[in-house]
Image (tube, rainbow, N blue to C red; front, side):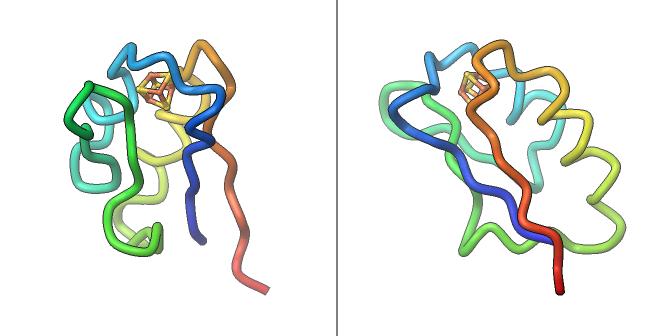
Length: 66
Ligand code: SF4
């Protein structure tokens, strides 16, 4: 799976990179950004889904591997 943060929606609460620091990072103004190309390692998938569920702006989308 891959994750993507919509920068138009993100308000920089930082929950994503607090919950899943190996999946998300903070940019210079504290907004969440996906690490690398957003690909989530299998062992990080539950943390990534938790981050999605905890994003107050619903700014994170998941693309399931096909
Ligand atoms: S939890 Fe959501 S709003 Fe907060 S930094 Fe992450 S993507 Fe942005």
